[in-house]
Amino acid sequence: MFIGREAELKALEDRYSSGRFEMGVTYGRRRVGKTTLLSEFAKDKPTIFFSAIKTSVAHNLESLSACISLFADGHDTGAVYASFQTAFMRIFELAASQRIVFVIDEYPYLAQADPSVSSILQHLIDRNKDSSQLMIIFNGSSVGQMIDMFMSGSSPLYGRKTFQIKVSPLKFFDLPQYFTGIKASILPYVFGVYGGTPRYFEGYDQKKSLRNNILHDFMEVGAFLLEEPEDILRREIRDPASYNAVFQAIAGGSTKYSEITSKANLESGNVSGHIKLLEMLDLVRKETPTGDSTKAKTQYRIADNMFAFWYRFIPRSLSLINSGNAEIAYEYIEDNIDHHMGAVFEQICLEWLWRMNGNDTLPMVFEEAGRWWGGNPFTRSESEVDILAYNSQREVILSECKWSTNAVGTDIFDELDKLALIPHLASYQKHFLFLFSRSGFTKACQQAALSRDDVWLVSLQDMLGL
Image (cartoon, helix red, strand yellow):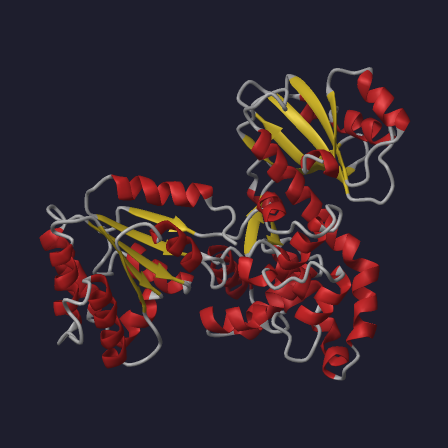
């Protein structure tokens, strides 16, 4: 089932409708759904879809020749082009009189097989772009290589692209379209464990419990996701062991640079380079308090839910898993998964706010949103707001997100009211308080909210439209 990706499809359709030569670059981690996106876009269009593989020049050339022959209705039947240059020239010839989409899937494999391919394409693009109706799309899963090939000034194809799309994991609110057979209360757990990478969750058995799915996908010998994070690191990184140490430090609660360096037992300069690469891969994100970009307050978090879940629970359980005692290992997950879900629920609430931004659901339109933390002169400690959203009119939404099995009570009002008095937060001219709850609100809380015009109560059921 194809779900989500509305923005990406619209971007591709807009470029296709231009009628001009277009050169696009789509990239993102493997299994994130890049090829599926391009297949969905191209399904009703004249398309040459060539998937490069990690093999010889001759095999890739045979495969490309077959793709051209199939497109040309057999006119090129059996023809194997003498070189990539003659094959690409044939495609430009076909695109002289009609709009054609030409996808080169996993382009880095082709460029590795024949390093001259990028230069050949550069010359053909420069020669034909003003008269061609070709829309060529280079797709790749090796993020680092794709950036080097298309965004580095030393690359032959640098400066030729007319658009680029970084394909990221799906959002939480894309998932209800796919998971129609499980309870709404389980859906956040699925997102918190598998994240938004389609290939990770598409095998989830909706007839089985979350527990049995986790055991099957993460905790059996040979399980699909048992080695996935390490496999991704091996594909992208020369020294995955030290990157593993960085992940384990962050997953263990070390979020400041100095803490990560100490916990991972690495030199500061190495950690800096590691974090930059992991940020590029969308695996780690750098955060500063929303509305305050003070460098000294920078924190780092694992950006992908599956990676965060894996590094929190799987490495410590590997001995039990490999000895056939996954059931015992799962007991720890069961006891601690709700601690993991707190940050996931904040992510879901933030996504909901962005989805609602600009319509009548919210009392204001905001421009920036995210976590805030800073000094509290009243408690002489650091305080945190789960979500702070503000605009240039100095209006602000302060939100608390409670992932609890208990209904939220009026005490949370008191917490937010006190936080709003912190000088930095008090500097906003108008405050709105949002309480997000997994399990709803007490009657007293609901009555208190009705007596105020600055408080909104939002449950998980509300967010899902149930």
